[in-house]
Length: 67
Image (cartoon, rainbow, N blue to C red; front, side):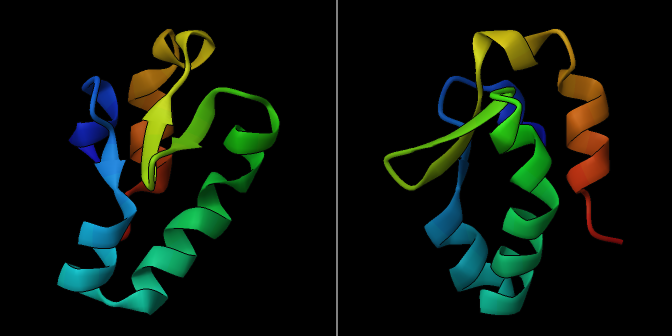
């Protein structure tokens, strides 16, 4: 999830390829609130921080980690 802090974000395709569709689905379910509040966005199949989300990036990233 540290990729969220980069300009490239996290590749949803890579998440699916490396960890499976279930993990990708779980990630998107967990990100739903952040997407709705416009602190995250999906752009070109990458999950990315918005400028609004940059201030909250540490908390958002830790919420999306799957342990």
